[in-house]
Length: 217
Image (cartoon, rainbow, N blue to C red):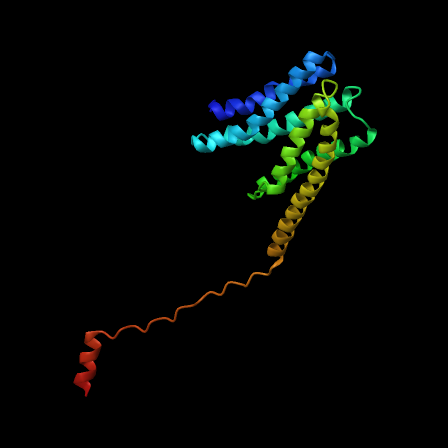
């Protein structure tokens, strides 16, 4: 259970308090420390899945914790951007942040529903690009005030917000298609079962009856 892939997944949850403390500890060194922790945690998001498949160490705990750790890490970083003064150049940048937060909640709800009906919601290639832009943007923005990358990170955040909206709509549409197919299958009238009645076999004539008939003749 506690193999290397799962330890990497759990580490993403463990570093969240240190990242969130950057809201209260406003020194430059803590901001760099929190950003480095976030970058390392983002990298583990790739390696935990890769190592689990390569080493044959996939587990139910890993499948449970991996999406939870991702969402907690991203949400904590977004809260830091909202709570820490001066992290955003313009208030319009609240828009991609809200889109990302709403999409995380939407996808979590969709996956929970589909899991109940034994259906999956596979990750698309566009969603992987969204994750890449999102993690890069947040890493740069957590370093805002330390160097110039923060402003570029805000631009990438808008790109991530646009991809987030598109992928969220795609997932929602796939779920609606699955629901409509399920309801249509349930409405199809079933043919009544027809019971086949086997004809009764005629009783075989006994040897005595045959002899009696031959005597009469």
